Image (cartoon, rainbow, N blue to C red):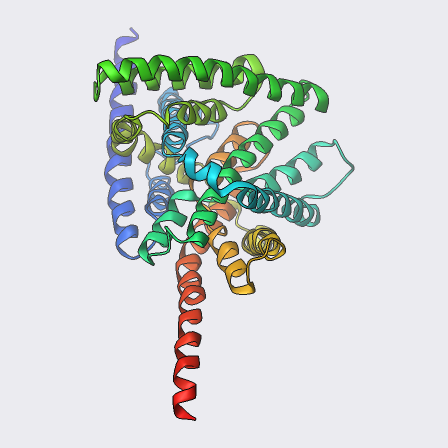
Length: 420
């Protein structure tokens, strides 16, 4: 009796995944060709697929079991996708560059987290309301600020490479600060999620966070030595990335199950554990194949599928405008301001602030976690998507102007004496 409905559900899931992969990849590549991040195209794919009969009830309350099972499957795949993305981000971390950048990058990253968190939270008070500290409204406002703390390392690196500034002092400072920024941002996310859940007080959450990182360092050191030993005897073995991915999933599970830490934090830490191995780039390439072909398109398309455009009223429009403006200027104020205090020139400080302004995958990941914990409504995904698209388009233009104007002024100064 149940064979037919189950068959229909499986076929419906196969159809849904096939459509997501085709439409998401096509629009992703198309977006990249016109200078927009590929992830933006994949999100747009989700927005378009939402209007098809197979997707038009994503996340809704439709009693039809086919809708429910398909939506649940896509949600599970998206969760695995976000873990793969964060694990790959950890694998790509350059610890030597991170350490060499020293206190400057750390100071820039701290201000790059604190200022957007503060300004984003205050801005949200005017739109979401404020009934006192510790209330559900306060945590929703705080979470909006948490979304703004992220910086897209991948997009920043791509821009700096394009303009030949990646290996300069400014370029290395921006990339190192962006990496530290994301680490601090994930810690902030972990604390906000823990405190807002009501499962413990601030001290308890902080102690659990410290306990997690201590445990991760100990377990990570053991795993690193074990993998280094194995890697020397079996270089470029296809088993290595499989084992590493398995441990990344275990880190993600243990982080949330035993410490109340976001699972993406565990996956990111697992990537950092293995990033210094000689085969780290090989492992990353293998992980990226799975993410690129299947899980990442589903994750980014699911963002579009979850985005509720029907609620785009005047209040949401004004919130989106304020969200984008605060998101952009807060990084310039925070990162650029502290850079000036550290001895950089005004132009160099502006370059650092602009380099830290772009948002990408991490902001989406943070917003997704907020959606799953009811800290943000689905309609506000529109604001996050707008911030990612606008900042990704503005940063290349503004960085090019910031880097080339200095050269133009120098050339003008050398020409001026000849005219006199």
